[in-house]
Image (cartoon, rainbow over all chains, first blue to last red; front, side, top):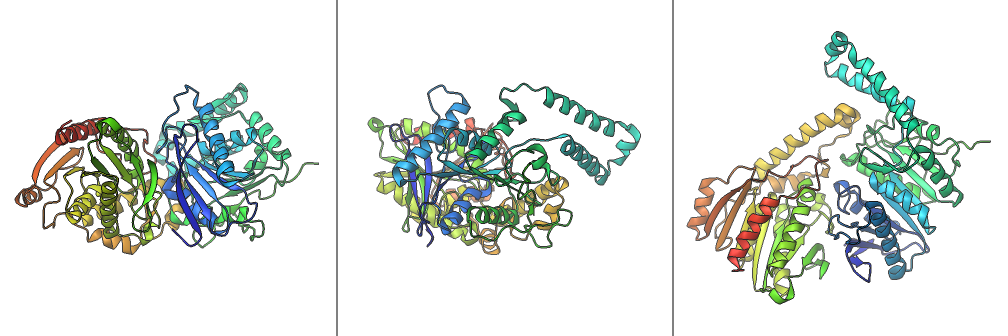
Length: 316
Length: 264
């Protein structure tokens, strides 16, 4: 193991160990720092997409933060629960067990949850349920769109079709643009008509936007700090989109960053480096803030980040 | 026993699946993972297989090579030679867990590594190679081509990816020159002694091994059999495939082979 970290393989909960994880401990622990808990991205094992969680855990240890990355029930090395609970209940129980394990084994009293995609969704739900959770790192979490972002998506689709030489279809059939507008209108109608119960967006289990707004407001009142990192190609496509979607959120509650050139699983090394740097800068209060870049002109260097809505404007 | 770190430097993550006590046959199976995304895709299959084998009374040790999974280090510092040594350490670990007989199951590049490790360890009773990668140079070429194809497709949606992609990028991995070099020079076909008395090949949607190599194994004294499974190949290389899939027919084949070996 490295000079900055020690890792041990663990199983919990104590009563019936079924969840497997790796507890990463900093050699030079920052006193009273929260423990970081990394949640599975979909069915990907605890190592994360392209081993991102392993790298992140070790980088966090290097700056004094312990972490636990573990497999939820039925994922990776962990066995499924036999309790007959729904996925949502089971996943929340997994997080509760993880926090209980850390509290007992390491005496941690506060936690930061990190999740990508469905892991981010789970992190938000878990934070609502446990006041010991003081921070969230959401990678492509909060997957909400509005009319402008959906129009942008369709324009990008048309632009790609043009670039691919499929302009003939656009011209001859004439239906592509009409269909694109139709998708925007139909999707908008569906979203505004959606009931307030939990719904599945694609394969995500996220609440309707109004409920998400209430959740984030509740977390903000509890002073939970959130880092929301967005990649490209997943529907977050203009600066200010987050503040448009969550207009009443406290300016200090959420830091929002989009990493240029990053796909959903941070497949390029440069984007892996970027997201780790972003998380490190956010979690360390004395770090340099991320640079503000014009999103129309990505940094000439590799792995550029766009800082978008770093500080939300407070409402009078 | 469950999850553990082992090896001379406690640098290797592994997961030991206990055999059912009353049927413990003092035999263990070491599982060698394929490389990259294939490791994640094969994980569920390996877990299902481990569960079946423990019911047969066999212990199972799954593990991560250096610089992969939860093992120490990064791919940038790893070599195929290190991975062969890691596998030998896994065989040693299985023996310290009181296994008198050790079999190795390897998939993809893991099969080629398993073969070299078995040759080096010298005391492996049984070797099963599932869709083996035996020629490192050819495999590296496939990975590079696969990466280029993936990048071309992915960058249609995110054009900046073309500019950000670096020389070390390979399907989500930081595949440095040293690692690539070690893969390029890797060959499992130049072995000088039989890796095990019994060698089995399973082909599931992949081409068979070179018949000349199979003949070489036989000439070295191994009893070799080949079989084709009706399972498809793992959704190799590309990210974003179905992680919930289990190669159930391959599991059944391997289970059957080991039952026959250990007279279950």
